[in-house]
Amino acid sequence: MSFTSKLIDWYQSNKRELPWRARKDPYAIWLSEIILQQTRIEQGLKYYEAFIETYPTVFDLAKAEEEDVLKLWQGLGYYSRARNLHHTAISIVETHKGIFPENHSGLMKLKGIGDYTASAISSICYNEPQAVVDGNVYRVLSRVFGIFTPINSSQGAKEFKTLAQKLIDTKQPGEFNQALMEFGATHCKPQNPGCEHCVFSSTCVALKKEFVMQLPVKTGKTKVRKRYFNYLVLVSDDEKTILEKRTEKGIWKNLYQFPLIEKENSSKITFEEVEKCFPEIEIDSVTVHNEIPLTHKLSHQHLQIQFWVASTAALGEKGLPISKINELPVPIVIHNFIVDFSF
Image 1 (tube, rainbow, N blue to C red):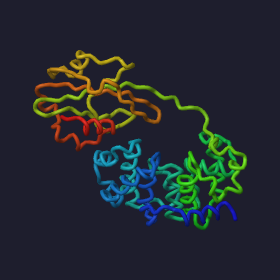
Image 2: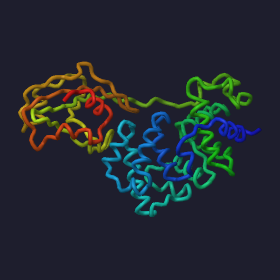
Image 3: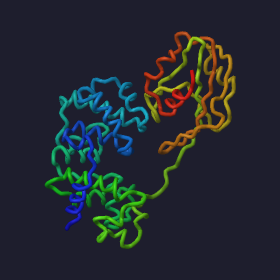
Image 4: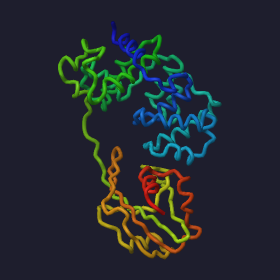
């Protein structure tokens, strides 16, 4: 039995029942694929269900305010996905009258949709034989076929795409793609793969030669930038605070945060630095909320975060009522602080 036949047989017996698999709706498939990028299904499922309930069609999502979309996305990370999701929904409604392009090339023209997502939608919804290649696919193919070409090289991307395209079942490409991703996610896992009970145990090159855990190969290490964030949490006697919108490019764009002092090192901020940030506000006192900095790890950045509570008599029109801060989309570190801090 061929690799393809074994894989699809395995999938039909072992696939998880997931809500988007019950429908070949391009909107549902697109939404699930964007949410599940860099995200485990266990975490992403509740977000998918929330989005489908709040925005059941692409028209509903297109009509939404970006802030509302970001708020619903809050905690999922990689917020550019949410901004692109909203932008693409608007484009599909305005340019395509709410109808998704029915082929890979048309889908690739939409912002936020790359080869992987376009392949998933076109194969599952429109039966186009376009192979998906993601982290799960790299892992399965590299192990079963013994491929040591680095997956983060242009040669590797081309080699794996070519192999996946060669293996795809042209009669049921969507089933094949979902099977390959599912097998990598639940069986041929990064750690503790189920090699002893694997349908490919007799043919898997990595298993035979005992280098399962060495594959796939990824060259070089991403340089991690260390940053020092000091959030200034103003609390006034009239029960207001200040939240500011991040508008610059980079992490958390268009999310809200407390006023920020970013330093080059771990040196503590001073009362004078806080006063300088708010020249029109009379600051009564400043105390550090967490003496030990909170470490928040992103893909290419490690943030050292401290919250500084500044008391003042009144903020007037500059302030946001504390009762309204939960209405705004914020990074998860800010959300956690708001939940834990007693204003």
